[in-house]
Image 1 (tube, rainbow, N blue to C red):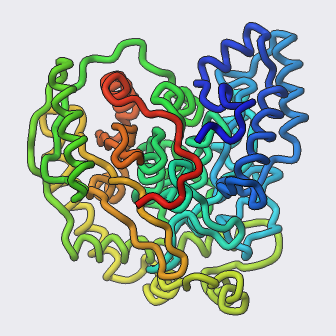
Image 2 (cartoon, rainbow, N blue to C red; image 1 turned 45 degrees about the vertical axis):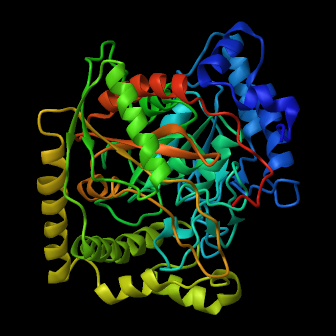
Image 3 (cartoon, rainbow, N blue to C red; image 1 turned 90 degrees about the horizontal axis):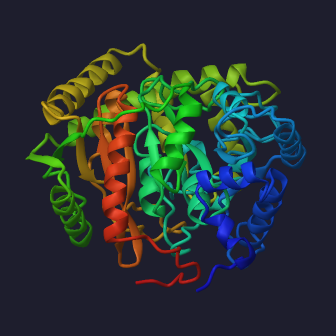
Length: 488
């Protein structure tokens, strides 16, 4: 099917560099870009539109006024920074003035939002906050049966490549909105896979930076040891521009040729996806990159149980602390959230419950001896058995990320499809990971994961740019197939 809003199709697929050039030359203005994107959102995203993507949680009331202000500043030669006049979407668990910051929950609806430091950095760089994106409610740490991309306040996010398939989680709306061309840039957050998954499933690029590099202040938390906001875009270059603004760092002028380890046993289990990964690895070798095959440790039941205990324990402490400090009246602890969702069961538990919240309450938080032991076992496995051996004598590790998007199922609950274990070790360790498209399988995007050492984001981005050049030349991604919801 052709683009459902053809008048904005060119804008929808323009890289940030092209928009910047057009703005600099006076060929367009920020207010013109904003008006076009708002029209596109109205045609594609809202519940009563023909597509009803539901990737947008809310739009900024002042975005037109701010766009006009940025245009006036440009005329006067007073550019604020490298993203001057460029619209950006932020995930709904990030607070920004004038947006809900509700994490998809009616428990936070109407509570005043503050300005998260990461949002302040975006505004300092000149960016326009276009709005916020729908997500897996409470960033997906809520139910054992949750369907990725669903929230009580926003409904279920569709995948622009096939509307009945998952947009991934928990940064579902950010990934889907980018793929649909609703904004050139977006912010996601990741605790374990929540940027990499929607990037892979929607055919976009996403980077989860080293934990602590991007401030999490005024971001609805799960886990202080694993939460990290990060940039998402439709190309590596776009993500690099956004990462520079978020991290207050500059792109290095030179980038040495990277060396890689290929995690040969970190497979998705989906034959066509794993075959595509092998094809890309061969193409990279033919392009002159040095790739070393090696087997890395894989997680077992103990590692999974330990990570869940760590996350639920930290959730108990961190979410309650956050809620106590959030302005306005309402829930002030995890216990309050549980009680609220029980009282509002028809809205909040329409499709699934909050088993992870109950498990978090049972942990009692970080004070338990079980927490400390689980955290130490997790770190030993992630760093000593996976990451350090994997990165020995090389710069980066490569692995497939996820297979094609699975069918969304609100009736039975989410049952995620094929995925490698690539996100788990860097999630536990707090080390960086990113995903970029490596082509289509059954007309659906699949992603390639890159893992690096702490603080190696610019090396990751430089390597990803080199890989992107090979993958796009070999298997360029077309536009999403908008209206084919009954794919087999």
